[in-house]
Length: 100
Image (cartoon, rainbow, N blue to C red):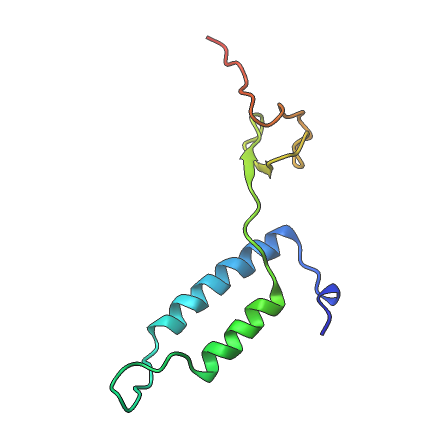
């Protein structure tokens, strides 16, 4: 399957990342087969299949966000306007002056 066939929204990608992390933790808790030498086997078919699936999904890391000063919604780190309320956002790295 071609990755261009997959299309997820930002919220869907975030949920997928959370689910992948949860399944990783669940798989880590499964009992491992023991080798003849008495040590745990390095990986199982499930580990390899799961790894291939995660590689194919290619979710990347969670994008950096910042909070809109007006509506408090999460905005992309480099956004110039809030995607929710369209408030103009200060450039990244500057701080808004608060009224004293």
